[in-house]
Length: 98
Image (cartoon, rainbow, N blue to C red; front, top):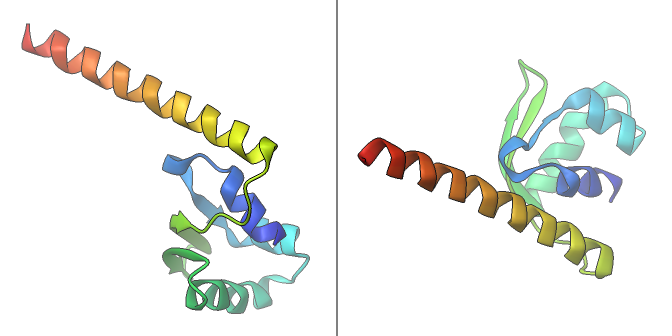
């Protein structure tokens, strides 16, 4: 669960996790991390790809564990940040078209 919490807190566009970070939060040694990741992917708790050479996990999607007030506030902030990014992109496109 601590591993899923780590992923949930990452920004959506930067969900790349180092095996070392997974080992630290899950209290595992590096050799056990790949098994944990394969298990989590198999249970479809997350969707993504394992890069064993780089020692990284690229995450596309995570199933929410539960929705309490803190998590809703966190999601709200993420939507606000995403909205700002979209507005900035739209402004740049409009400026280019003028």
